[in-house]
Image 1 (cartoon, each protein chain N blue to C red):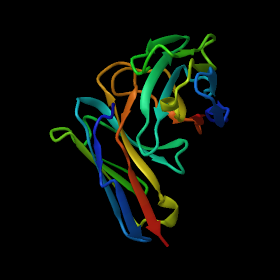
Image 2 (tube, each protein chain N blue to C red):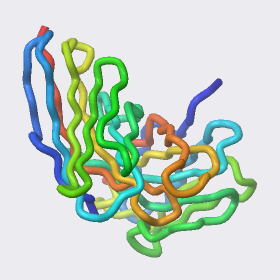
Image 3 (tube, rainbow over the protein chains, first blue to last red):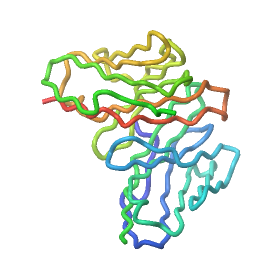
Amino acid sequence: SQQGEEDPQALSIQEGENATMNCSYKTSINNLQWYRQNSGRGLVHLILIRSNEREKHSGRLRVTLDTSKKSSSLLITASRAADTASYFCATDGSSNTGKLIFGQGTTLQVKP
Amino acid sequence: GAGVSQTPSNKVTEKGKYVELRCDPISGHTALYWYRQSLGQGPEFLIYFQGTGAADDSGLPNDRFFAVRPEGSVSTLKIQRTERGDSAVYLCASSRKNQGTGTRGTQYFGPGTRLTVL
């Protein structure tokens, strides 16, 4: 079963604009990760934020985490056409296995 | 070095047949995961191996699904008596050994096997 929901389900923006995607989850977590997926195949790890962190940056990516609201956001600044993909948040829960529970994803289209 | 590889990339089979999907993890990664992704959905966890043993198989949907990792490297996901509902992309991921709460290794995903059951 899915951990939570992502919002919006689909997002279309112009190149150069910022894109914000939100993720909500249901259970306590050790960390939350964001992945990108092109053409419905392999996932590429983007960034990991631990449960004791509130914000993290990596290049044009900014992730926030609010454990009190069980939510996270991913901001992509100065978007490029190559950012067009599906983006998934995934939570690593309190069990010791490291298994990830994914959201349903946001499909981002960046128009050149 | 090479990433996670999965074979075949596509598999078409008939209802009721048996299939095997193979995953070659990144060398040295002791943790291996199988996920299944249906169209328009996020991946769903199936099974986790730490070394040779299945440490968590809670995601396997029923007893038609089975996975092995006999030497702690390559893993095979086996599906018996396939059904049309088994059609999905099957993803494999590997990571370094779990190092405790909050310090797990990043999971690196393979390109997946697209299974179509006719």
